[in-house]
Length: 337
Image (cartoon, rainbow, N blue to C red):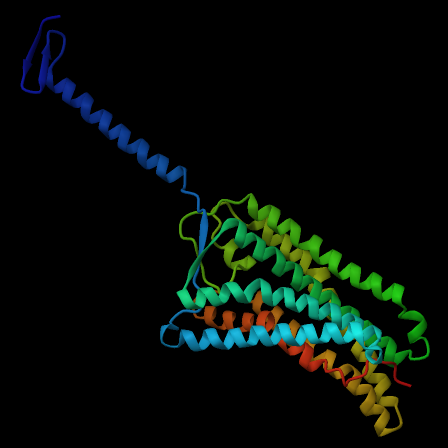
């Protein structure tokens, strides 16, 4: 074909310059549209999360850092002391303190899983965490929470036998039963936490990747999913029945029976001794379950974020420290005659 070039426009016998310009503009428009469509459909996947931590703490972050550092070392020291005393001294060799030793070890897992990373976040006023790191933290936290709930339930059964059936206490609560109950608590905790992590690993996280918490917790992370979290939410509700609601009902029934027995004790000394053997456990149960249920039954939106973090501090940082203090070795875990 005969071709004539005028500037940047090529004229052909079969074509018109405006046809070429139109095709060129149409191509650019189509390309731009496809690019926007690609961006819309293929959301950029998040490779790491940003943990906000405690907001607006710049002026006193060092003080907060030192406070939690001291609490962490006190938690480790107190729980190691309890474990050592349970292992070494025979005068506290009772099922109650056998369970307390495992409770202390579990509290150390909770504190070590959260506090060191939280201290770094406080200093940096926020920090990133990888998928693997976040999911690992969620797993061990979920496992520890489940194990703690079950151990507290087992300890309530121990108190029930010690006060309501003191003559049968030694024969029923033997080493075999104690070992089985502890193994069940740890095993169930390890298994229950696993499905959540498997489902989380299959999710796509996109857009904003800010976790409004001081550690990777299940609910704040689920809010960042762009593939839907209905399955995990249903699983959480289903598993909360054997992990939270059944233990709460069981503990309530056991303590109703315990108080009925205490009321029938004739002597004041006997009543005081009976009450002292279960008051420490009841204090821990109310503190732990109260904060746990309050934190997970209410949505974490808007102004509630600050309150949620405060409640989380109570059951994830304060409780591991308070447990060995409340369960002081001077309180005997023996049957009441």
